[in-house]
Amino acid sequence: LPAVTSGDMVSQIPTQIFVVSTGSQYEQLGYDRDEAVAAFVPALRKKFIVMCDNHSMDGTSIIVHEYVHYLTRNAVRLPFPRWFEEGYAEYIASGVLTKKDFSYGRADFGRLYTLDAGQWVAWEKVLDSPYRLANDEAQSEIKFYAQSGVLVRSLIRVDGGISAIMQNLAKYMDARRQGASEIAAFEAGFGLHVKDLEQLLKRYAKKGQYFFSRVPVERRIYERDPEVTVLEPTEIAIELGELLTALGRTEPDAKNSKLASTRDLFSIALGSEATSARAHLGLAHLAMKEGDFKTAEGDVRLGADMAPDNLSVQIDAANFLISQAGSSPSASAALHGNAEPYLRKALEIDSSNAEVIFTV
Image 1 (cartoon, rainbow, N blue to C red):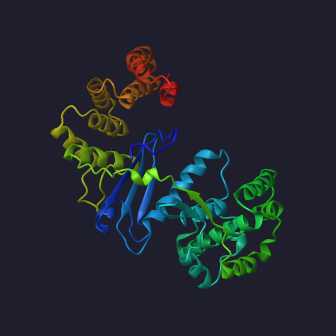
Image 2: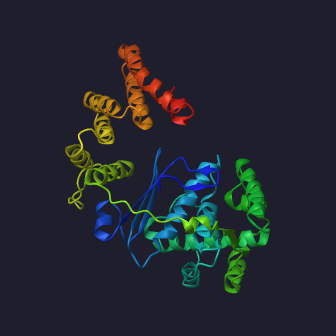
Image 3: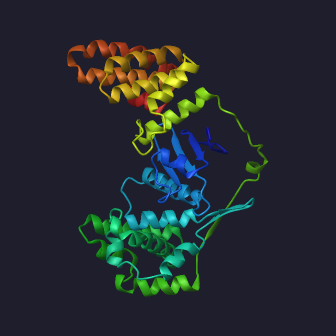
């Protein structure tokens, strides 16, 4: 998805989607297919989505859930409490897309079944859970998601919509900033007693009084003809190399020894296309990580010379030399001087780019 466009709104950060057909391929990327079948990895210039074909789990819902986290964490300066962040993501991820609209907030029957089976996690623990529950409490973690989801849904219904719940959440967060406990802040913000929550939500879940919303979908989205592009081996190697770099998995472990190393992938790309600036920058990133700055500088300069009109490449070249200036005070002036042509070129390409402005 090079850009998601709606009217005058254009996403400046593309989304790269990888779909693997088998669980073993998914595990080769370092994931456990028994825990999840999809992953969302945000990076500075690109968002990565990795999905595995698994009929027992809904990978699309997982991606929507993680994407909601990405949006809320970038939109709000202060972090939401975990129960709300996860519950709200559950609320949006239950969405259903049709040709007419996108509806969200529907009942998740899998989560309802989870609530019906066994004992609920104590609300004091749910509301005061900043991190994932302990590994030996796997069932408790599943219950946490289910309870958080039904709690947020019920608050949206009781409070009269998301705008009202956000006002109450602001009261909650004010109370927390003033030193109130999670429990006291929740009761002050939402006017509910924690000791009554379980019975209240069990009645709510049983009645299925879900408050869900619909957003109209513009018809022209469905009038676009899908485009399928067969990637060349060079492009595939670079894309996989950049994915593994974003995941922080540059070398295969013993369990996944069949996976090529990131260095191998970028080298394969250069073997097919010696003038690939992205491959040179990929190798430069690896060399910098290993502390081999001389090799990194060579690849950075080669990449910048090969792609004089590529904004990202010019910024990377400038940033590399500037970072080296900080680690070598004696050569600082010279390195800053060497970075200047790349900064000037980046400004010529796009003087309004946030990365360029920050680097300058």
